[in-house]
Length: 218
Image 1 (cartoon, rainbow, N blue to C red):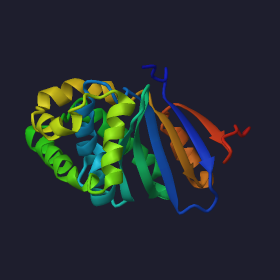
Image 2 (tube, helix red, strand yellow; image 1 turned 90 degrees about the vertical axis):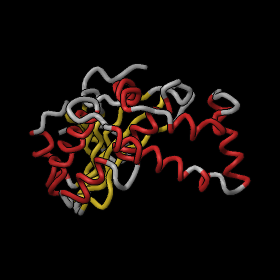
Image 3 (cartoon, helix red, strand yellow; image 1 turned 120 degrees about the horizontal axis):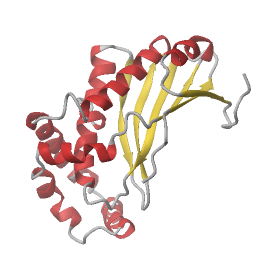
């Protein structure tokens, strides 16, 4: 897995935007990684649930967002891990600071404890039947086994494997998924309002892109 050698920031101008869309992304292990179920539990408590840390921070405590969180993208090779959401324009830089803080804390100063992990595990287990109600959904689940080379009993074992996870196991694998200082930041917003404070963060080299992804000379 090849991480970005240093953090970087890309800004895309959306004049008049009332919200900023923030995405912080890094590469992640493949779907077949033996620690994947640990990553799923960590993602759930960090940003995958409504009650997750990032959403509770930016939405419920700060009132800067209608919703923010994290997501793991599955892949045969390198996957991705991303964090972010839509935030009010005048709190763009501050939101980036909070997102990075949450990512650092979950592998450092505020590792998940037993109660937090149990809630995440229970939420994931309860959601499983609802994702396998139709024949198409069941076929998709079997398709994951074939596509990613998982063991034939993966879904039969899923709830048991999930329930058996301990905080020590999840925390031991967290640094394989979370890389707060190797992020690529992408921010869509009104640059006349957010460019200066984002640059002042010194999160990495700042590049301006147009909506086609081409570099804009400044």
